[in-house]
Length: 232
Length: 261
Image (cartoon, rainbow over the protein chains, first blue to last red):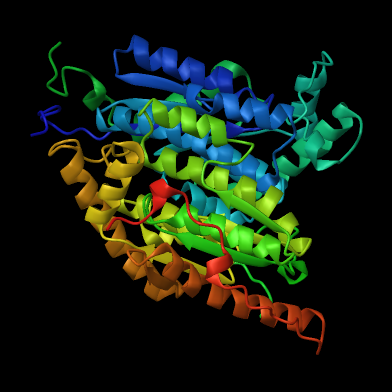
């Protein structure tokens, strides 16, 4: 017999942020998290990065340049699945508001630019629940590039899209790669619903608009421990 | 020879028309005699001068090791396990199977996508989803399914190793009931799924409880036909002279893999 966990069976909510590097989405979702947690809601934050399980293989693939667009996509999907099955889904079932810094749309954009079939990608990720709210951070490409490349940071091989052979110069390659991702994001959010955030506005203005949307679309009071009938 | 095609959309930048080799798949559980038959087939082919390469599950350079390691930890959830195997398959497909076929090799696959699909279906995935994922897979020239009853499989595993494998007993799905009962149940389930897949994909089903020699003869006859047809197509009218190599000439199988009496 399965133990009785949550008598009220509150379904969790999933909020994702998407956008280019340099769009400020990570800052905004962290602020959103701080707000929700200070208000006393059950909230959990998860990032688009490697789970322990798959990390080693991904590192090997990158280092030895074994990855093709298909295996690049599959290994990252495996990685995501591990995080999804181990963390995101159980938390949602446990009545949490889960905040995701990047979600499947990141893979849709990045892997499509690498040449994977778009329809295949959507089907591959079909196991992942759609977010209740997706915030898409919009800003002109040049602004995003400026923010990232300003300090001439060291760019990693795959991060710069060097595997695509766009250019021998990592900065030039990064510009081309991000430009293509930017275009693909545009197409993706014609296909999938998203709340658009103007990422050129002042931070606190972006945040207050996001909070309004969250309040409007999610019945926050049901995400208090007490409201869920859980006594610790 | 029929030209090669993918099950679905295939892979970016691959033209299946250029793949002139032959892809032969053997499916069947551990203890079905699969590896023995692969070994015999490889010897037979190489003796006849066909360059041959063997691929199989968990053997990719990319994730083979990581996958084996993760499975030792028993911490993988079903979808993750599925996708991990899909990555392992795709790596071998792109970096071994396709280049080998392009170079005209015979590729022997010691299990292929069907095992992966069957395992995932048992664990709750839909066939429809799996078909989409494995739309990247190439349609083989022949698929042989070695059909052996769960009890015989168990017996052969005991003789070979002395114990039943955790995953082949489906212990990740169900622990209650003990390993032997779970092995029998799990293998029976897989078998039912394979029967359904057989209808869909047209495998050649062979009773794996027959003698090693008899099984090999069946496989060999069919493979011979395929190779003759493909070389005839390749060399125009000049069909390859097929010297019948009898099963008697094939090397004796290792003792421990001999079928249970």
